[in-house]
Length: 483
Image (cartoon, rainbow, N blue to C red; front, side, top):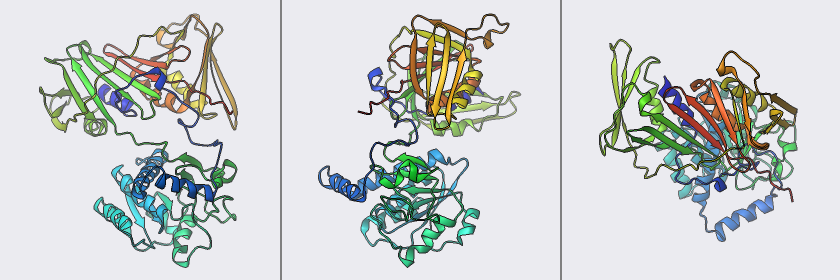
């Protein structure tokens, strides 16, 4: 169903009311796992940073804890989506690290996970009592005892390690040894908050039997123990650089059709959707209507429709709801769903007209395959357009890869052609992660068009036959000078 596919392609973004090429910038660390930090904090430096946040910048403990817990939940949801890992155990310690875990438990529950918390040594302070109370109110299961470590995999899909933070000093107290053993021997992927529990903050694991996390979320700044040579194969995120997308967007409707725009949280990518009125079987819009919608809620409703159902979307003037009607092909089944609208108070943006130095048209399935294959080698793709053709290249720890395309001389099917139009050479670097997001629109169009000029966003356009288009704008990566 076309409308359902369209909503899945824009669900990665949220609406914004600023558009500026100068504000769309992508550096090495905003688009991917954090693997190459320039500096790491010692235990003393980490403690000093916390004191600066409290004293100089006037952050409260609960403010920082809320930000940390949200960052942890977001990183976990990114690496272990709820569709595949929907049950999580969070093991909380008595300090601030445990508080971060309690906040993460609440947010993961809101993201759709079934969450349990094991909190063996509770901190008798109002802040922690309130966090625990909130967990219980949000449906988090507070467990008093853990099953044997080798049985945890029968109950959960992943474990969040919020046991010890950067102030930890050995030895481990007897009351907390079972919790640490559960993390080490559970045979489940472990997501460690700030540092892996039991590790030395500066030198890392002290033995081969130490905890081996699959994911580490550094808070405020990375500590010395999470240098690449110490964390081995663990994925590493910097908490605070990740924010959960609220999936809100505004649909602007008039007699010409429907338009939607949304931008990701870091202002690196923007999506623009146009559905023309003449492309619908029936379309009527007597007055201009702006509808603020939660795309996540809309997607849940659209999943109720059959693949061949006809979808009708209806809203009245100044309405606070929108109705979706699904009709089967033989009209033997008709269902309707009403969804509340949101007052987002956002206006449709004007994207400046740009003359591009080069334009590449190619099969969309081939573009998706190239992005997928190249992302196995590196985090960035360099697109270079010259008179010889266009080259896509990347490099990483395992090696490098290059794919060259020349213009198709002659071909029977237009959809399989590669057409390159160039006024001047252009070479730009883009994040693989975003390009792979864009290719989710492959099923909408047999061809994709890439438009590039120096120092402006790349445009990835999928033209939807007979109805409109979806365009993605992606800022080129700016490689930071090491000096």
